[in-house]
Length: 187
Length: 187
Image (cartoon, rainbow over all chains, first blue to last red; front, side, top):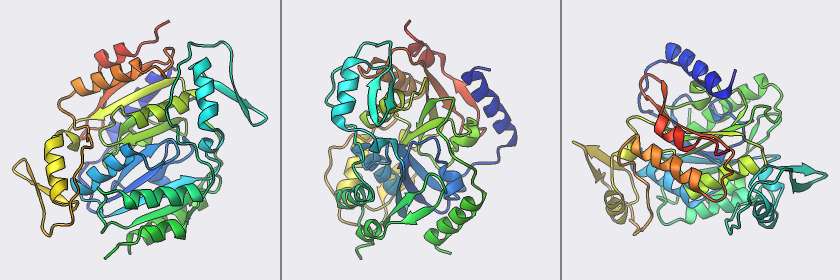
């Protein structure tokens, strides 16, 4: 069964069992990684009450700030959680590596012995100056991200921001106190 | 029970029942909205095989492109799905409204009779030129987003990109053919 048919079949089954949807009472937001091995609904017990923002690495980008600010300003979120995880693919490369791979080919790369190389056949490449925001060490990256978020002028100082690391194997969330400290309410 | 305690309790229960995590066999990516009423794992039957990118509106931003390009280049995703939804909060305001509200206060706003206004008490506001990417009409916005994604120089032309609208009440996914057409593989 092709992927689209499978998604549509899963969706048809979901439509049958779905309950009513209301806006949540308990309003909070979570920013985490796109990693396929993570399901925030399960690992954080979301129960329809959290706005979920995900990108490569769970990084604090302008787009993540945009989404979080909308969540606070128009949707009334009261607490934010930034969750990075162990063994993140974003820690396996540098911008220079990624840009060189893309300049050669936009097609998939493979990693062997810790080294990324383009897989044959090549597809047309593209020069880029994009910052891919690789993760250069945890929990330092998480702590820096939470501090940057806290310092953003559009972020209300009354919102507590907590930083957690997620263990990709056990599923356990561990609060990184230095990150969370940076996010304590200021009043 | 406060929110952090509740999340940590849900997480402890999850750690007990969690199975092993491997990288997915069936690799695809989904870009959708942060809306608390949507659970992609349920509505699309994800089963650990999709990278999930979420932001306010499910919009095609540079950050979403960054994440999708990483998913294709380093994680081997083969199909991408962009999913917007009905009754999106991003369709309830303009950039001008949002910027005026934020310049007055970074605290929560309330909507009455279709008009957003700041709720008292005010918190220090902040001037911004941020583009909040409000949605000015669907499915036109979805179609434009998929076309922009398809046209991005870092996006491999071999990846099919499909556009769907999600009905927030029924949970039903409906393919928007004009969006998906724009994403047909080019070879």
